[in-house]
Length: 185
Image 1 (cartoon, helix red, strand yellow):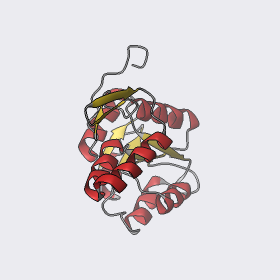
Image 2: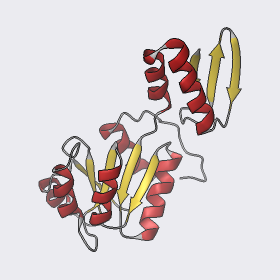
Image 3: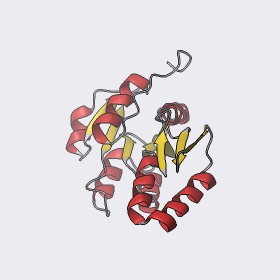
């Protein structure tokens, strides 16, 4: 069995099994899990791991207190093929990080309850916190303060496709360079 991504976003998968080809444009998680289990049972762990790597989406935690900015960031990330969780302050970001594994964190530096500077320091002290890239987001020129706090990089607001693509490419294994439709830009 060979699985090939057709669109680079995980929505279309080509399944080749003993010479027969089936293309399904909207494979559900259940379908993908069924194929994964079949791979594991019939071909062993190596094929199953390869399949899991093929279908993995980049998971991003967006810590942003402005609801409109958070929705824009999530929409852009999802259109770029990523999964995104939203936290409205630093405390929520720490809670999410403690429960889930993220490939990248977009951290607003100024938020209520706990700001991004303090949240970054606390995440850096957690398991996997030292290795998870944290990219500060700011509408001001506070780049030096974000980097001094332990963030890996800074991206200015507002969130735009052309700003988030290079961040994903630099700090994750994201390789989806599909151009958005004109309506998305």
